Length: 159
Ligand code: THU
Image 1 (cartoon, rainbow, N blue to C red):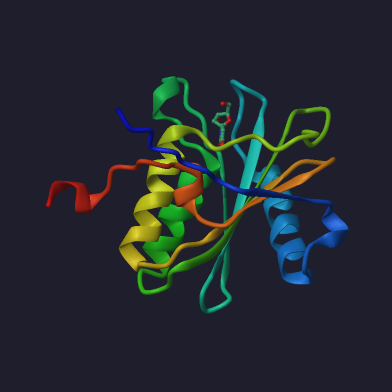
Image 2 (spheres, rainbow, N blue to C red; image 1 turned 180 degrees about the vertical axis):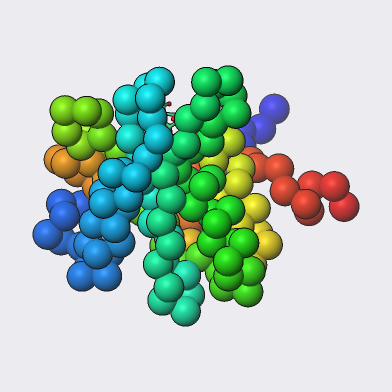
């Protein structure tokens, strides 16, 4: 018997400690929450992706009366980025979430489906990207999707 040990390092920052570019991306994700469509959960999520050419695209969660037909902010954003700029890898993805009362104190981790879509975006461009998860009290920085989704399934698994 052998162990397969998987480790991930998540860096925790205060907003003021981040670079100006990262602060701006988080601010864009926070702003985006205003454009979410969340009549069912009342939980607004916004995401902002900075592409390698510097373009910033944002997206939000979009819910549906047939619940599973809705989609998370992360996938809205990545699919939009990949649709509009198919030749541009994502460099950084920031995510912010709020209830009706306020932004959450500690970051929410992305759901499994979003992690899988993030992974495809890394693999397809062969370009690992950073993920910034915003919370009012702390911000998590994850250096690549691989750290969020270890032991992952991608196209190479089928070779
Ligand atoms: N949601 C996101 O948009 N991103 C996440 O990382 C977690 C959850 C959305 C889905 C749904 O509209 C609402 O938040 C509650 O689950």
